[in-house]
Length: 168
Image 1 (cartoon, one colour):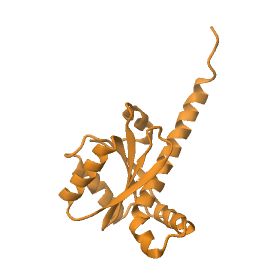
Image 2 (cartoon, rainbow, N blue to C red; image 1 turned 45 degrees about the vertical axis):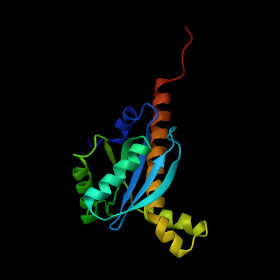
Image 3 (tube, rainbow, N blue to C red; image 1 turned 180 degrees about the vertical axis):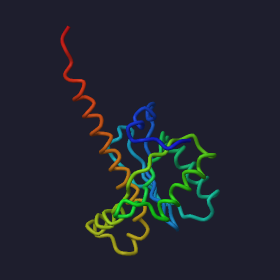
């Protein structure tokens, strides 16, 4: 298990794999999974946090069933760009997962992801009560979609650098 950059991610995602997105909360872990074409993030049910070993077992089961090739973890960076206690908790989560999985992690700046997810749920006319049960997975999907969009732009840039195919 390792932390990799987004540029290293495509090499880890062959063979029909998906990409998982996580939003760590104190009470829940929001989960989202990409499609196999890496175009869309789909929210999954949240994992209710109990104890790390139990949470990790449930998460690893979900990742196995979804054929995940890597994990994107939202890194809660402060608005000034510094890392506070919540970011340290996210990094500790990755360290603790190290002995349990070989899946690589990508840390992704999640600033305002929960705010954006909540606005989307409000626009979809979810009640406050229903939003509470979906917000963390919606935030995970928002984080994952940001990574998927970045992967698409990296792929487009790589194709542009190669130029059009030449006739022989």
